[in-house]
Image (cartoon, rainbow, N blue to C red; front, side, top):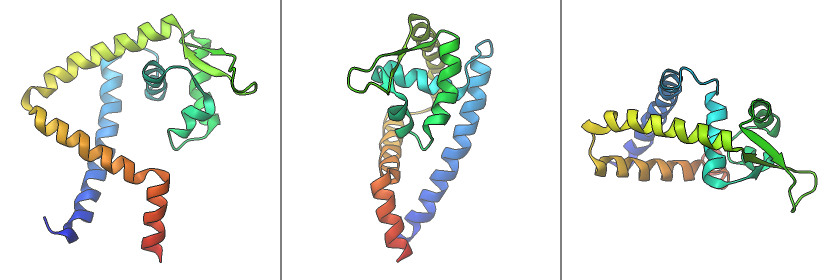
Length: 158
């Protein structure tokens, strides 16, 4: 592929990722039809499972959303007993959001169910293709991180 065709190809990747996101959101609602957890809430539960207790500002900084947006997901999770707030020894005003045993059990069950579905879907794919896709998407994500993206915007705009 020539260098001049990489930009349009990456735009196609971006478009496919957007469509895939919406398809995955719909698929998740079908997979977890009896669960009353939104996709955004599910993502927060998985983040807490993988990365441990975090502050609202930390959870928001990982996504292009406000702290208020994160609170809109966290408060119902707290009300339903999936997460709890703990004192933060590092910062008195910024509490830690942590999984409760119910939250941990729920997200682990959701992941196990999804894994069974994805295992079936993956039968027609090759592991090296999946690994290459993972690497390409990681690089693309890295390029969209604030500093790199801002440098690119400035370069293109000047």
